[in-house]
Amino acid sequence: MRGPQTTPDRNGAVADAVKGNWVDRRAPAWTRPYLRLSRADRPIGTWLLYLPCVWGVLLAMFHTGHARPFDAWIILGCGIGAFLMRGAGCTWNDITDRDIDGSVARTASRPIPSGQVTARQALVWAVVQSLVAFCILLTFPVQAIVLGIVALVPVAIYPFAKRFTWWPQIFLGIAFNWGALLAWTAHTGALGWPAVFLYLAGMAWTLFYDTIYAHQDKEDDALIGVKSTARLFAEDTPKYLNGFLVLAVALMGVAILLAAPQGEILSLVLALGGPWAMGWHMMWQLRRLKLEDHDRLLALFRSNRDAGLLAALFFAASVLV
Image 1 (cartoon, rainbow, N blue to C red):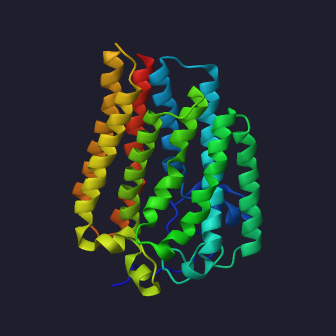
Image 2 (cartoon, rainbow, N blue to C red):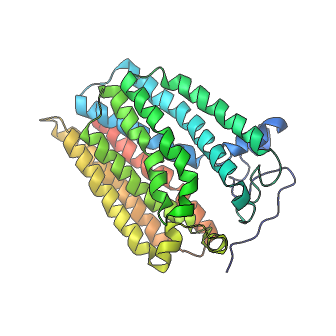
């Protein structure tokens, strides 16, 4: 059974955008196709890219026992950079998938397959966003700048991953959680094992939420030969999601234990509340999971903003006590 078919909106709105979003209602008409390429009408992706950055800098502050004025810029700069690089990455993804997107019900209304912009215009937009993000990156320490440049490799590869592997979500996880490494390094001046384990926890989380997301397209993906963990796991998906949940919680817990300063018991307890709170939210998602309910799948995917925020709130509390 195929997913629900969609009719292109006469105003160019994308089918799976948040209803009544600011792009469709308030943005100048000439900017809307470009903002839609950047997924500004679907902010969840920016949150999922940004939250590992917040985890990284907060865990680094927990580890060093102090916050510096520059940390405020790390948090703000990563937020702006997440918006820009998520936009650039999504634009690049739409360029590489322009022939596929037109064959999938959920993506046929995107700006390139629907004719709102050309692939060349989209490429220029991707470059502009990347250059502005690079200017922000240049304000960070040199070690973080190097990490930011290296991050372009998985970003470039990800759109092609579904053509050659059943695990494209791993490549998404590599790209989307890079901010944990970068933000930690921006605070401490060097990469450390706590950041690496936090990064791996984020990858497990990405496998969890993006498998849920991919179930929306599995029928269309099968018809056009695109691979995903949703197709690979099929009806066994809840079992795998439970494994990713446990892995994300365990790896985040290890990151916290490795980062913990000696003698700070209350801070440690608060920090450890982060993975447990996030894990609880992921379990709530599992209980509500219905693999054939597309609206439910999209809602659960979007709810991962709250899962990631729960971890961030506990990390912040551990720094403030």
